[in-house]
Structures are given as C-alpha cells and as structure tokens.
Picture (cartoon, protein in one colour):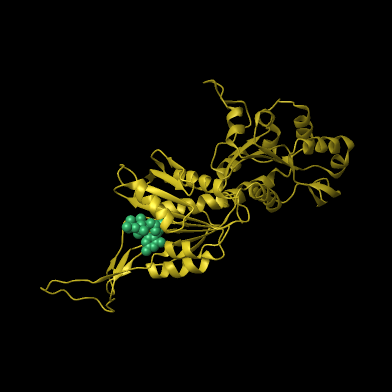
Length: 402
Ligand code: CTP
C-alpha cells in the first residue's frame, strides 16, 4: 500500500559518496506521489549537484542560509521544518549525526533539523570502522531516544574498498521505512472502505441515455482521502472524464444503476465503511431498444421505471460494526428530509449537499455541506474545495469509528 502519496518529505543530504543514491531516492518518492524538497550541506555539493536534485524534486535546493546575497533574501529554515511530514537525513554522515546529537547549527541542514517539529528519519552512511566506533554508536542511540527512525546501513563493499556495515540503505529500503511509518500512524490502517462516485447512465437505445451532471469529483476526493489515511479503498465509479489521483485506490468502472447495485452489493459485505456518494438514476427506461431509434414526425414517449434503491438495500443488509454513509441533495426542507432519509435507509451519517448555494454541488470544484449523524448532531460547513470537504467528511467518519 502506497502511503507516500501527497506526503511532504524533506530530504537532508550530507557529504558522503552515498549522496548519489539520494537522486534515485528523490525520483522514487516523486514517482510515488510524494512532494519532495531537498536541503544539502555545503560538503554534499562535492558529491552531487543541487541542479540534479532540484530537477528531480521539482523544487529549488538550498544549502545556504541566503538565497540571494545581494538582495538580502534568506532561506527560511523554520518554514521548511513546518512544511514537512518527515525530515529524512540521507545520507547522514558521522559528522552530521554527531552535530545533530549536540545541537550544532553551522549549516542550513542542521538549522532545519533543530527547528523541525516533524518526524525525523536518519539513514547513516560511513566507513565500517566509523560506524562501529563507540562515539557513533552512542550518537545513534541518542537519536533513537529522540524517537527518530533509524534506517540501518547495509553490509557490503564500501567506498574505501573495505567490506563491512556502513553503506547507506538502498533507496527502496528507505522508501519502505517511510511507508511503514506513515501506515503505522494512519487512522484507517486495516479498514476496508468502499466509495461510490459519479453518475449512472440508463440506456434508451444503442446511442442515447438518461444521465445527470455528476462529475464524480466529490467521491474521488473522498476515496483519495481515505487512502491517504491508510484505508484499503475500492471506488465504484460511474462514467466520468476524471482520473483518480491516488494509484492505491482500486477503481471499478460501471455504467448503469443496475451495474452499480451489483458491485455495491458484492463489495458491501466485506467493507467496514461504505460511502454512497454516487448520483444514481432514480428511473430508467422500461425498455431498452437494441438499435438506434429512428427519427420520425411522431411524438416519442419513453416509459420509465424506478431503479432499485441501492443504499436502502445496503442499510437492510448492514451488520454490527459496519458504517454506512449516504448523501442527500435537497431543495426544500433540507434537514428534515435528510433526517428522514437517514432513518429510512438505516444510515450512520448523511451528507447534505446544498443546492441553494452558488459554487456547490454538481460540476463545481467546490461544495458546501452539512452532516447529520444518528445522534442528531448537525454540523454545517463553509463553501470549500471538494478536497477540503472530503477531509471534513473523513474526519467526521473517524469520530464514528470505535
Ligand atoms: N441512492 C441509491 N440508489 C438510488 C438512488 C439514490 O443508492 N437508486 C442513494 C444516493 O447515492 C444517495 C442517497 O441514496 O446516497 C440519496 O439519494 P437522493 O436521490 O437524494 O434521495 P432519494 O432517496 O432518491 O429520494 P428523493 O429523490 O426523493 O430525494
């Protein structure tokens, strides 16, 4: 499971031959969807150029406190530490480790370390005797006491030609250590979540359908947010142009309400949390014409029949410990109607989309919602980006989990 997606990782590179591996590490992290920034010690520039790391990380790389000496702009080391979810010092030389332990701040990397409030990870790299030395071992112990993640060096041939323990862990191992860290503290670790999103298309004939304006964006953002927080997520998605961002989310594409019901029923039994945010058609043509209906001067009537209420069916099948979340789109008596739907469909939470606000609902990048739970708690939110709305929804669902 990729927990690195959208994580902010600050890499501190110090002066070791292993700095060349930092380039691979940056590339792998960026490929996994992490946002990566790099600070270097001045000595590290002897081993790898800031240009290489800036190109791979897509961010400027700093090794100096000043950015532009003539105009007096400086690099705000405090901001870098606040920005990061993790600061990873890789490679960490014996010298940098010693200075970290003792609080020296004679370069930018150390100043960032001293002001960072995020989790610190350290991947040492040095010759075997330097690594074995009592002072290095004591320093590493001191970092463990500070609850830094220590990514042990590997054993093999070293730059000196000697063979032993001291070479920096491989980029893949470092990635794994960071991934494990994020997964261990992810609130939905071990939970199976299903989200439905988008419209359904109900065929009239071979080329025409009845659909709606849902883009699927809200459901996709919810799926992403659950995945970011460690859940194993399946997205059942109606026809949409939008692409999922998080590669960890498993996507199942469907077309009609009947397809969606089949997939929803199939995945519900095995889910801990089910979020029904799709805009499912309430009616479908009673008869589906196989070929294209030819135009004529006559009036054309299409008989419609109701589709199955998927959410209601899930509410009836719901077992102890499962959470079922529905959406409502109302124009009148919004809260009253939502309250009725919550009870009727046996939901744990209902998210009320407001149609009465500009910029909310179908087709917009923003949304304005209220949430009502079984204990009758009603919370109303401001107009926000759908990404932020998804965070609010997922945070609320977390409060409903035991
Ligand atoms: N829903 C569903 N199956 C349908 C129709 C809707 O599962 N055939 C789900 C939606 O995904 C949403 C919830 O039911 O989570 C509420 O949908 P909405 O259309 O607002 O409410 P309805 O119960 O269909 O009632 P009404 O249209 O009268 O408001």
